[in-house]
Image 1 (cartoon, rainbow, N blue to C red):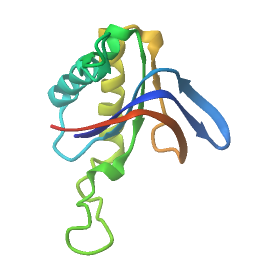
Image 2 (image 1 turned 60 degrees about the vertical axis):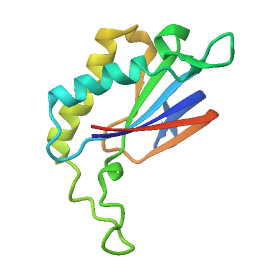
Image 3 (image 1 turned 60 degrees about the horizontal axis):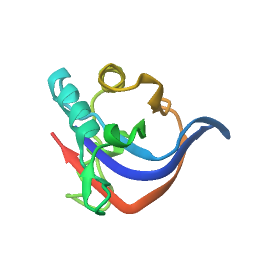
Image 4 (image 1 turned 180 degrees about the vertical axis):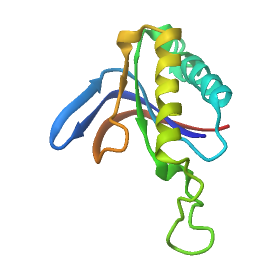
Length: 148
């Protein structure tokens, strides 16, 4: 599992030129479900993301989580994160990405785990396997890559 976690002031996802979802201040999570990922990895990652202390406190130190600030979270599936990074050439292979059926189940599990562990109204999503246009205003910029 690879997740790119970005601290954002806002983010939105459009599918077929129609806004599908949007958030204000919080986290945009691009989630790649890789072959061999399981429920335990996904559940642990969901909690880790919600508890990442990457928002500034009153002393301007990154000491607060998205929960602490009452922020929103958007989770967007992105199988390309499971590429081989073009190790054997200039065209990356996606053989490490989980099959769509299993990947969708684990993606949905991530969302469910976050909704069960935080305010479910503050968890938004992209649309699995859709051609999405993601817009964001990165705050900082702060971007964390989690690999489990």
